[in-house]
Image (cartoon, rainbow, N blue to C red; front, side):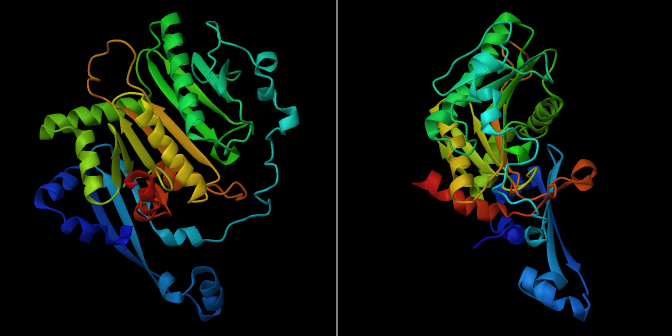
Length: 359
């Protein structure tokens, strides 16, 4: 079975043209880390990591997307590091309100609405966010309180309701054109309330900084190579067994992830194929990969006529944020100031997802 430490060899076996496109986008560096543990550590190492050899010689893989300047460092051994689980995963996380004290259980009585009103979906309803980080910032409150209990129809409704809210905000204020849909699932991913919910923001003047950077990078790639970046990104991942297509929606297990198990879905429109692909990823996360906490972000192209965004797709990105009972953070100084450190193997994530897209 393929693994990230064999990425260089796997790419070398691709057709020449595909290798060239891969090298337009990615650079791969594989280094060997060597340790000399004292004899007294051997029993602990064997218990924790399985064997001393796994620790004394470690392959560290750095994959950099040279177009977007995203870089990930892979060492699956890091998933076996000691963690502090003083708080059991089944306990109520600190600072997360219990359901009985949950304002989202009574949204019409306990949450404000936006100046242009609420949007009601089949499985959710919007509310104005009390603590905004954008002029127009809503909460999409799920009828289903449990954040990890969702089905295909519910996921589609959450996203579609959020998009309808954004369109309503744009109609109210045409300068509001730049939209993100955000779902922080459980406290580990940043949710401050346990009740299932997502958020939507829409701002003016320009898209959010990372989205603007991506648009600029994509334009630069097209100018340099005369090719579509997103088509090439999908093509090289598909050649590696890391991507699938459903209708016009394209799903990619990304080689330069922000964190664990990152998967990307690209789509020309918000349709059943796009939302269905997102559901397939999230349900695989939950049911096969035992993910207890995730972040989902969806970038929408600008509403209205804005030059420079022609052909820019909807982009959904999903990452695993780890066990809710783990008190250690999955983000440290390296992620802020260096590169993303990842302890999952994209090829293993792809094997778990393959049944969802190859059936």
